[in-house]
Length: 202
Image (cartoon, rainbow, N blue to C red; front, top):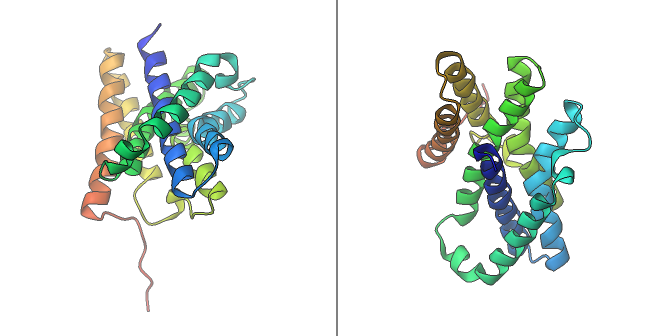
């Protein structure tokens, strides 16, 4: 079992928890929570695989992803009160997933021979579009379309990964540092109110 595979499973778990938390907040039933957890966890990766011509999409080839999502549903319901007590628990799990999936998306796209700009876009798609689908299904404006720094944090982290790969042979360290970059930028942007919002000129 590779280190990258473990990271992918962890990313699936935290994004699924993020989705289930959203479903619970919107008072969805168990089936609704499973569906929202599923699309949040694998929606972005599925869209990426379709766009880069990988079929069937990754999670369908490995039942461990489905088991991980179901485990996330169980864990979230069993420990719902404790998780809900965590300050900004939704933000925590969403940020973790964002960092993990961005670099995995970039790496997979580069692995099929596509260009760096496309890989950066696919990293953002992998990380952000599960959340987009989640928000659309729960009748919220997706974070990627708000003034918050979200997809841009993914692109920045992906760019850091590409640059590190050019100058360093330590792939695992490159991945970890790049993932942390995405998480750090996302966290700081919310904490400090950073925004790419363009003010209207009167």
